Amino acid sequence: MPPKFQTHRLEFPPELAGRRLDQALATLLPQYSRTRIQRWIEDGAVRVNGLAPRARDVVVGGEAATVEARLHLADFLRHALRLTGTHVGCEHGVCGACNVMIDGRSARSCLTLAVQADGVNVETIEGLTERNAIVELQREFVARNALQCGYCTPGVLVTVAELLVRGKPSRAQIREALSGNYCRCTGYHAIVDAIEAVAARHLDAKP
Ligand code: FES
Ligand code: FES
Image (cartoon, rainbow, N blue to C red):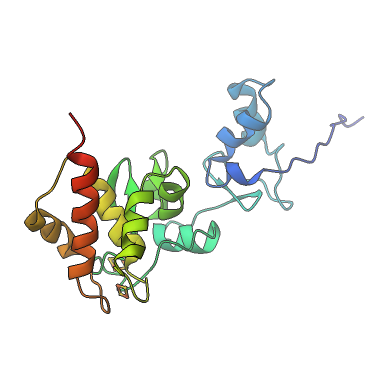
């Protein structure tokens, strides 16, 4: 007689999007050990759309997705995770529109393969916004008209978020940091003014 299995249908909540399948399952099913969850996956007991995923697949849109080896991180964020705040301009590391934070450092997501981001902390413009890390910059950009079409703006804000963590930059240092971000329509004057104003207000106040 074949063994009987209980079948459970699991829905992955949106906050688990982007997590590895084994980690997402451990969060959803805390009553089971990681070892047991790994074994389920290895044995093919976990099925997604009728297929047996691997532990290192990631949860996307409520399901586990396989990341193609050649997919770059920008496309993965935009198309698989629907995080469209990360923009794609040149796709060869020149314009900075695709900048995201990888383990706290700004990096080109068009030059990073999605599989290289396995196990690291990727933060996009959406993440920085949600945790209010750049709210002052965003307000100052609006107040000073430091954007027109806004295509470059997420990448610029990611660059500047990293810059300001390091301390108060001079105007020359702000310009140098922005040399890796192309803005085709605003011109850099208002952008530099906005960054300088935020740096002066907040970093001058720090002991
Ligand atoms: S799209 Fe990545 S640097 Fe231009
Ligand atoms: S605001 Fe349009 S490219 Fe910068």
